[in-house]
Amino acid sequence: MKVIGLIGGMSWESSVEYYRIINEEVKRRLGGLHSARCLLYSVDFEEIERYQSEGDWKKAGETLGDVARSLEKGGADFIVICTNTMHKVIGDIQKKISIPILHIADAAANQIKKQGINSVGLLGTKYTMEQDFYKSRLDSNRIKVMVPNDNEREIVNKVIYEELCLGKVQQKSRDYYKKVIRGLIETGAEGIILGCTEIGLLIKPENSEVPLFDTTYIHALEAVNMSLRK
Image 1 (cartoon, helix red, strand yellow):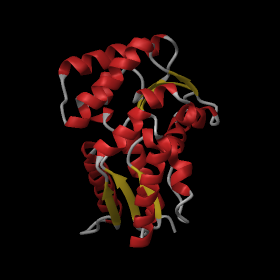
Image 2 (image 1 turned 90 degrees about the vertical axis):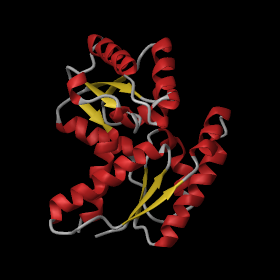
Image 3 (image 1 turned 60 degrees about the vertical axis):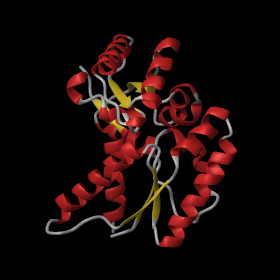
Image 4 (image 1 turned 135 degrees about the vertical axis):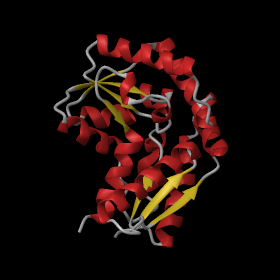
């Protein structure tokens, strides 16, 4: 079993889900008392979010690169960044290590293609929805990506940072997300990517008329695949 190096804390609410899913899946596959061989480095999200809001992605990349290097020195065989948004700086992180990073968008694209879906709606932080670092990864897999309108993106982003990252799951926000999802479906989305690792705390399969692709769950399962691959 390869050692999974988890960069968590962004937010810790979703990092808990990664740890749970990974260990439950290892136990399901191997049975008995088996659990995952993993290292978790949980950062202070206040610091990372400040770099995000200030647009200092270079500093964010350097900081997470140092974290990844610590995990490699600790014995990790590959890295899992437990957040969608910070894949924006995956290149800067990779420069500091010699082990691979499991890209969350690639894992999502694989699952989308398995279901024969060609167009998806993307929900996430404003950075993920508006910038190309994530959407281009899906585009390269010939998956058409649609995002909510300007006002909807602002509210989706606000719910993530002011509620979900703080462990607040509110019905009014779930209702709003469901409305946004319906709008994306009406414009042609055949599936919905929950492109922020906290959104799965709020939105469940029964909240959508089309398949949901929960990136936390997908990424965690792919980490197990990589860990157990011979």
